[in-house]
Amino acid sequence: MKILVTGAAGYIGSHVLKQLLETTQYSIVVVDNLSTGSQKTLDRLREIREFEFVKLDLKEFDKVATLLEEKHISIILHFAASIVVPESVLNPLKYYMNNTLNTTNLIKCAVDSGVKKFVFSSTAAVYGEPKELPADGVDEEFFTSPINPYGVSKLMSENILRDTAKAHPEFRFVIFRYFNVAGADIYYEDNVLNPRIGQSFPNATHLIKIASECACGKREKMAIFGDDFDTCDGTGVRDYIHVDDLADAHVKAIEYLDYNPSDTFNVGYGKGYSVKEVIEIMQAVTDTDFTVDKEPRRAGDPAKLISNNTKISNKINWVPKYDDLKLICKSAFEWEKEVEK
Image (cartoon, rainbow, N blue to C red; front, side, top):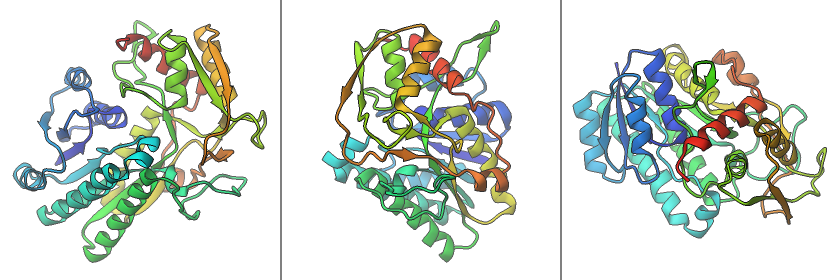
């Protein structure tokens, strides 16, 4: 059986590729245009075992169709997307072209070439800015109302997958809605945590990535955006999940689709930490004390967003291994020290 992994030179895609290489015997074809992904990451993963790499942009529709036919792909894991929320507001067409149009063509090519399984990388951004949150977190039936083109582009792709599966019952999918993904490869060398891959995306906007850059001295300071939310300490609360636990869910989804119908799952730990707590933990595990400014709230930031992960735990038997914010921060920091300044 042959798997196609799109966007595998990027942050999440590379960690899924790592686990596929380590824990399965699937033959793997990687597609990435390297616009934001890292060739160095792919080179490091080749040390685990070999895979085929095709440098290709998904907007090249004819080449995508030919690739799926020639390689006899059985499963697609799709991570190739634009992901920066502020950019999506300034340049929405980029997001609809890359995230929605290219995904639509990939789905069409999958159906045309007989691909039976499709695992899609979506986001909790499809839930938008909830005004009232259930005490046990947002579940998959919660109302979707994205507030930016990034979230809209992902929700549109979700709906295209659902409609396609209705028209082609042999085609099945899993949609994963990610919460706040963080950390780096959990790999120990001589009992020392030494990540081989991690988040290399430039101009990061993710809290833990920024905090680890501050701890390494790559940034002089960082900011807390809003300290007057209705939370334990006034700062926003989020559900942070280690990238290796997220990757494990994708590997399990492949077998899940052998015996189960298409479905949508939140992927998070079902508990939250405030921005202030995350920064304090990063400072503690790295023994640093970088400057943290206070800035006004950003538009669209909800006070609290936590997943209800009951569904994925029960249906896919997903059991997180790295549900530890200290380890998440430590792995992000250890990786950041290795990334070129």
